[in-house]
Amino acid sequence: MKTMQFKAYSGAGQLVMAEVPTPQPGPGQVLIEVAASAVNPIDWKLHSGMLRWVKPVRFPSTPCFDFAGEVKALGPQTSGIKPGERVFGMLPMQAYGSAAEYLAVNAAYVAAMPDNLSFQEAAGLPLAGMTALQALRDQGRLVANRRVLVVGASGGVGHYAVQIAKAMGAQVTGICSTRNIDLVRSLGADEVIDYTRNEASPLDEPFDLIFDTVMNQAFSHWRPSLAQDGVYVSLLPQLGLILHSLTLPLYSRQRVRFTFVKPNREDLAYLGGLAQSGQLRTVIDSVYPLTELPAAFLQGQTGRARGKIIVAVNAYHHPA
Image (tube, rainbow, N blue to C red; front, side, top):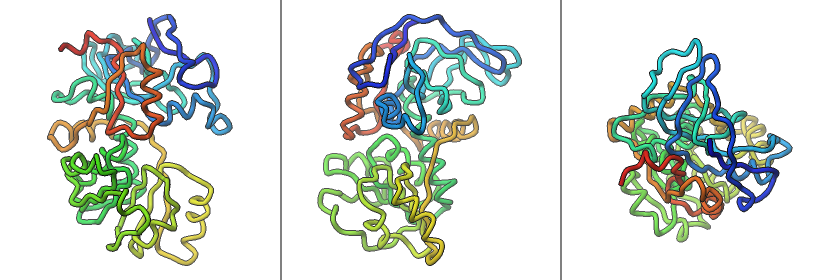
């Protein structure tokens, strides 16, 4: 089968096409013919060497975590999934490699695709969608009628966070650039703030939860906008934030927390249910064929993608 691989730590230009044996599903696994994958910031951060001291990569290495496709075979002791079923999911952090034509994956990381999503739409959802869900529900303890601020509301994680928070009954404010205001409103945000006009000033009304998907401002910038018992959730455990998370409880009811996505079938099914009911959609920034994965990585590194960058792995799954 065809796959894209890095031979060593390097930039996206070093991704090359490779032929490798088609994997065979082991106990509890399914073999999936991959129709589409997606690019996330963690993909290029891992393979550039930025995280080599935290999570080293073994080479040659096939990147990407998200997938959507069709079940082709089941391994021994695998249940709950049938051959021919359309599925989507995410590989665990220690087992990336979905930029390939076939994938053997534990059934615990796979769920049935919603009928109303294309393979490309479903492929964008797992990593970013579960990150948003787990940040809001598990770290932010979000319940109905709370005020939520999503920083980076038009990005991969952010655009899902706006929709999930609305589905949970929250009052949602999104921060984005001027060109994305209409998009974020269309996702259901009650208010939208143009950061190019408000970048220097904290917001007036306090928020119960601030979910920062961008992390280009210090916590001190957001703290005046956080309720007395509010929670600030970040995607990245920077040193300063770790210190705040440890010291804040000594003198304040405010909290700083971090989210690290944990793929599981239950959360995939929850997101699939929201998509099926029309409460959650994938905004697709761009679609690249597998052979153009380097260009997809470069697009992701600009930090300006609206929604998700999708990789079409098997084009015949996407009729015109």
